[in-house]
Image 1 (cartoon, helix red, strand yellow):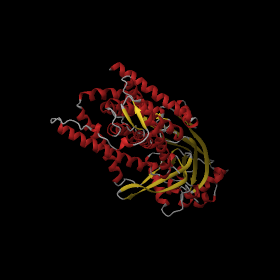
Image 2: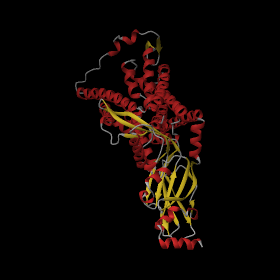
Image 3: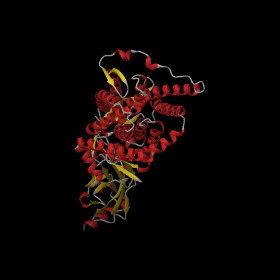
Image 4: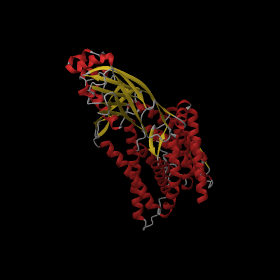
Length: 307
Length: 255
């Protein structure tokens, strides 16, 4: 069954879009990451223009992170004060990212920048996760205790503008969370991702937040930033296709449930290995696209990218 | 009397006669099965028929002497073609050319291959055929390469179509052609042109208009998104939040 998307201006199969939403939701439920890094390339693959894919993908992440925050807020695991500081840094980052996208569209390099950003980010994060999870799998039997990093004193503690975060039980400078928020906002604006898979390790290893508060707080921050990304793209670039977004959300809701059920049955170190392999595979695929000689040297720019 | 004259011309088979022009005696009348195409939620493309008749005082002139060319053109606009080059191992867009006046849709059907209908100079002057378009490209030596790439890309999307032999003659004066548009056709005002050629000369032309427009919820949403984008942006957020809360509710029940 085909449906015409009024903003993307193409006709797509309803079942294909529902299945895509479901597949990304499945990954989200299974691994606990947002899956935005899968959604944007998937949408582009079906023939939707990158600008619409980035903006509509962001709106779908809003829905999935709202449901996540609603579930976490009940368990009192969201550090709203930390979230607000992260978002305060994220707002200028997002605006800069969206502005950069409109600038790059005119120069014809948006495709390259999005792909390079994906390769660099997914490649480095994926390889880090992969090596870490392989090491963990190998060491499982030896049961080595984790290093007591929390007692270390390092550069983060020397910065000014100290603030107290009760839920996270932290007394640290506001500058690192502001900077982290800025970075993730920028990536969200450019790549249409929530950035949860960067924020979660950064909050654990750089901010030293307790694991119990990390997931809920990062979901809250991702929610605010992707809402802003959606808003700016819809307002300035008019690239949010609400029909497409609703279909993706509907598929995602179902996918998340099945993903979570299956994820619960698999050991967490095996899960981490699987997600890192998925991320590395995605980065490799995009890297191959960048270096392989194209079938046709010429391409027609989408209407909205014409000077 | 005129019919008799024409019959005499035919009988003596004077090749110069047609070129000298008995032009006013033949004219085209063209109709479309629909002059408005609505894009609704189940739109997967459009298909319609352009039909017509050659009004002639002389129905005995063989159909083989006449040629019909039908051209459908979509709204024109600037289009950029990019060219990739290799920079330190990575393929990226290094060059581009913008054509100012490219139709978003171009369909051509004729009774015979174009080169059998008229001389290249005639086709070029009238802008008939994808090879004879002047889209006001940049002044550069390789502009032709970019134009060829543009035609190649749009043809692959079925937005540019050339069908020599796509016009069927029913008898000596009735003709028709079927036009298929893919789902990706741009909205806007289209022109439908029909040309009658005889012995390489255009002797009659007819032009009609066609409108492609979004209808119903598609039109409402499109207008909402483009004309009041601020409110559309707010609505998009509200919908996403409500969907998320709904999902959270479903989750809680199943836990």
